[in-house]
Amino acid sequence: MSQGTGSAALRLALTPRWLAAAAALLVFAAATVFLGRWQWDRTQDILAAERAAMAEPAPVESVIDAGLDQVPGESIGRPVTASGAYDPALQAIVANRSLDGRPGVWVITGLRLDDGQLVAVLRGWLPDATALMAPVPGSVTVSGILHPDEEFYAGAPTDGSVVASVSHSVLEGLWGTTLLPGYVMLQEQVPSISAAPAPAYPTVQTADVPFPLQNFVYAFQWWIFALFAAAVYMRWLWVDARREQDEAATSLEAP
Image (cartoon, rainbow, N blue to C red; front, side, top):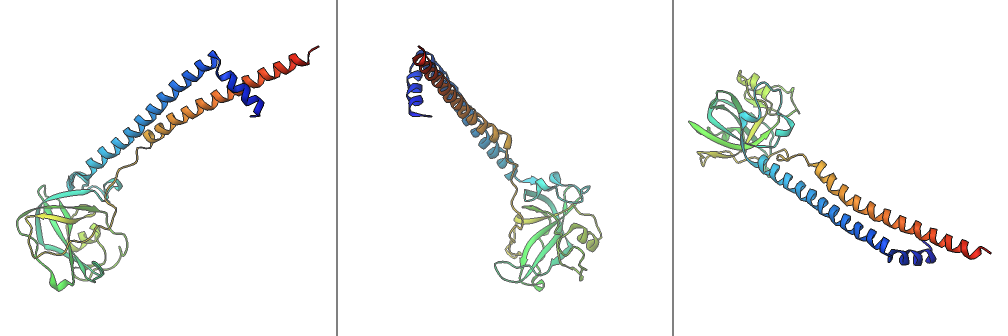
């Protein structure tokens, strides 16, 4: 915008017509900023509510069932509970698993749920298989993180009760019974015992929720509307100022 056109635009902006247009622009901009902020806050509220829901432990049998071949993607890393009784005859050792840099093994035990289904519970880490500890007898309630079946070393042969990876299909072949897919990595247990394997660290990202992209986009959409309205106002003002300049120049040139 040239200096002359800029001065003309400034004078034009102070006329009643353009002052009214500026007032309308400010009202519109304020409304769009408010609506954008509302959508932004709604995005955060949705995330907070859904994350709170996902953080609430759910019974493992309500998240997966025996009819599935694998843990649903949205359930991986979700906090779950499992109530039932351990079957000490259904145990396996997962070889070559470290904890804080120390070599060792994982201990997997079958937990018979109250509804009769069986789920694998990773009870924790031990320095070696000779230190194997018996599970708590009787009814227990386990809280932990739901993990999917491990796919690496899936075809590795078992050596007695020693397996290379945690897979419900491998454990089914080892134990001769049907299991729910995936496994629960134990974090807490009621009742607890002092002589228990050390808790292992989750190997998956704990459950999160999809980002509410629609609300997020709506927030920026409203703010873009405000910028667009300001740009249209400035463009029309410039066009009007330029037109008046041209008309003034034409009138001066006329004889």
